[in-house]
Length: 79
Image (cartoon, rainbow, N blue to C red; front, side, top):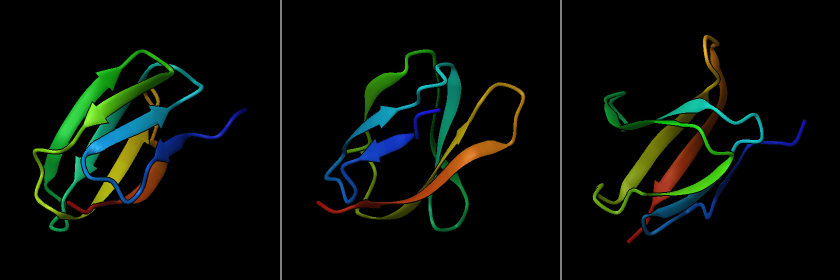
């Protein structure tokens, strides 16, 4: 299957997400492991605005329904 893509990275806030498998849960964690953003998405391609988060390093996790995370990536917000 096609890979999951998150771009651009680093970002100033707006992130494009492509998840060919469709329905999934997106979570973003700060350096302390606290969830700072989450959403359940049904589309395979969409954008998320994380511009409200302070500049820094975050972790993005994408999970398919009833599964462990299938994608984990460091995300840098650089304003």
